Image: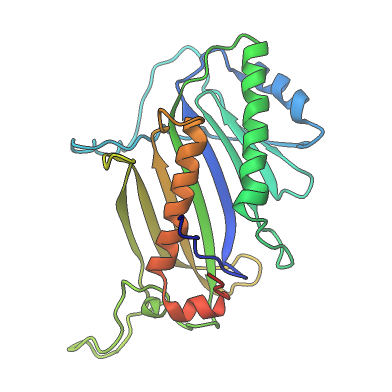
Length: 277
């Protein structure tokens, strides 16, 4: 019997992104992205250009290479931008570059509610990715070979409900202990931030990905209200042997994010968010 995932009536989630990284397709260039827009323009009439995302791969058993500082690259072609196709409201978008496909949901107004993974976000990703792969095949742009999958949840934990000051991270996270910090003169630091990661195993217990989390203080752009931004990212390999290797990891990653968010955050905050399960 499968244990149900924790569920909240009013979760603090403001953005969810499902992403698949694939082997680069050199033929997928700016003109082809224009052709792609024509196929999705009715659903996503707005367009933006952004710098491409760097490749991200979770590795195990070896020391990760240091992040490069400044990169210099000799090339005869300009880099292909990462193109955003947005709906009219800007609440949903797809991002495309020669090695990445992303579908985002974003909360842009206080009246919006999180539309739920199973009912809305996952089906939207499935449909848009299928349309993208059909486009690649129709235009003979190369074979789609996924190499990493990624689930991202962004949460805005607003001050005034359960905590007041940026130093009170212990009221939000289970990992932070409150109390006196002798011999420091104040009981609470001015601000706190935290990050970490957990290995995600496959069915056989072998590492297949990681859950990464980070939380830091910030201010809401609309009104300057203090908040904690909590990002949770589950990234790893497509689950070979599954009926759909991409969706299998995305579902697993989402499970780790929901359980991880619940385990990391304070039960008192769960009451504020209306925990149901």
